[in-house]
Image: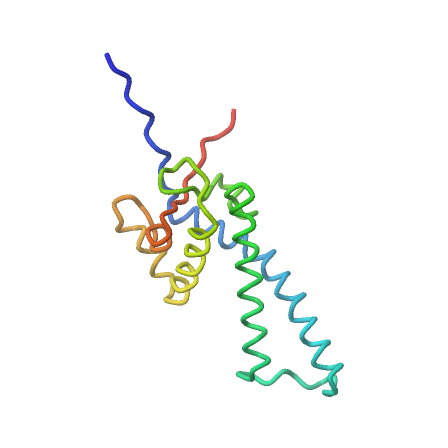
Amino acid sequence: MASTPASPRPSALIGWRMLALVYDMWPVIAMWMVASLLFTVGFTLSGHASRENIAPFSALQWLLWLVCWLITAGYALLSWRRGGQTLGMRPWRLKVVAADAVSAPELRALTIRFVVATFSLALAGLGFWWAWVDRERLTWHDRASGTRMVRLPKRT
């Protein structure tokens, strides 16, 4: 009797993904706070009153948001490249892998994953919720990047 090849690990359920996002929110917000502090100190040292805020929708405000997005991208991409997991993915044994569900994805694929996930979140998470109707439980960013998130088996 011929042996059947091992089936690939299952895609992570949307609930596990959301838990990881909530967990990852905390270190990312901490890094955003440091960036905001640096912007505020620079704004004050450039001659603005200490009680004056950076104007909403000003070029400086947009730059701050871009820096926060880049910080988030750096956190995610570095984490995924150094083992396939962010801090929030570790407790739930989630890992980003290439489409074959085994090998590590390329940096280009991870960048596409992050950009598409950003747009997915901006659309009220529609690309994440898509996993509920997808046959393979893949999100938009899984499909667009040729990656997937899998749930690792428990260690014994």
